[in-house]
Length: 284
Length: 283
Image (cartoon, rainbow over all chains, first blue to last red; front, side, top):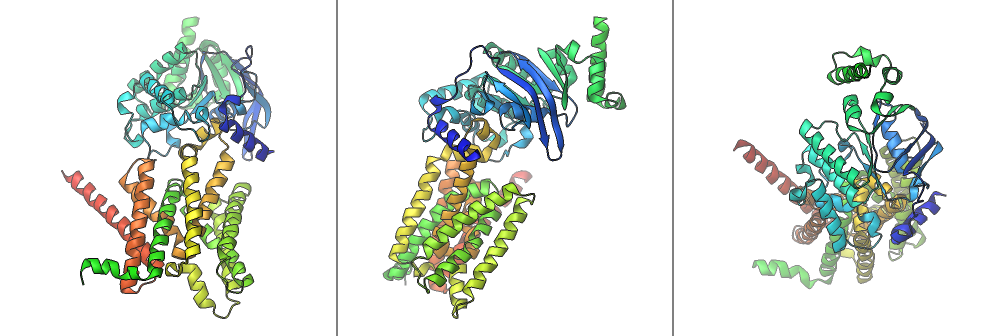
């Protein structure tokens, strides 16, 4: 079974044109009661939702809520234990239009490659086996670098980048991959305000290009202000919708439990609690 | 005697010329494949794999009644089987990978020593397998090294971008739908072939140094993958040549002479960089 799949992948990589066509009327992403169970316990339980093309969605939830697992299940890297993910009406396993933008901490930054090398890695799927980058591929890579404003640093060794530049490089790689769905795992964590604004500006550009962006993050304030819809997750999906609905205090209490009140001194937590309540007052 | 004579004198012996050719070819293959061993942190795997081919070599040795020709093929089969074996076991059991490697490594190595010890002249033969005998390389050995080493290099070039993606970011490799399992296996087989090709030059016990040391030295000197491969290959072939001359003039075992030169170059580069850093910090 696995061996067969491996050979199928090899043959698709030999001839990238034979990849699955997208179903025209299917949504870009449909998750149907997706559950993921590890030996250590349940990571995701019965998660279902649909995304529209070009949307910008935030996934929020406490630590260990399964945010990364959900992104991995959508990308096809992690097989759901039950339920299924469909990308344009098909299993994600055959698609190369999904880009997973990794957490910066999960990368070996001393690996001997330049920024342009990493962005070119996004082209490997389209290139296929035994084919070297053509001028067209370099053009796509340069355009991607231009969008994220890294053209000046293309020849830099990756260990010389700042946190914000590292994050932008991975978004450029996803652009070079010509991804229609970008999954970003905590892209804003640990960045200063300016770098976070850079990322949001790039996301605006992605919206112009009709790219759907699914972002996991910790900051509820940011989720409520800068995204079209918010998914509130704690193993189960507790809510999905515009921030004022999804982040209703009842939902937040269900997701975070006592933690929401227990940490009034924690900057992050305090800010989120306040914002959400202020928001509530405004609506009342 | 001039410097010129010092260099030319050993070359009047055919065994020295063959030895030099073998050392240079093996150095290049080891260094290029070793680049991935270093980048992916597989040094322990390489060491274990080298040791675990000993029973295969021993069986071939016993079956062939001391005949050395078929040993290459026995070693090749043993190396490929154990590389895939280690890969499977470490993936499918609860035991951590380095523990699994340790178990197989010591177990198969002991089996190899036990088998060889049934032969009377065993200390001499065992030493050959353990530490290599580059001066005993014959012309058909050179052909085998050239063909299999060349195949390994061609494979590394053909799958260059796939191996780079897989080593840098395995999750990207999966979302690009690359055949990750097959590529992983292919890399293990490449390491196995490299080890077998180098068996006669440095032997089982010193193999890991050829895989790791030149590549690690190059890693200190450059931050680009292709440059790292070329630099590592250069360092390894220079070490091979210098090591053989040292072994000729000072009568040291050839395999260890080569490895010692590799280590010395690493020490030199590392030391100079450490000093350079100190100076930069002061100014």
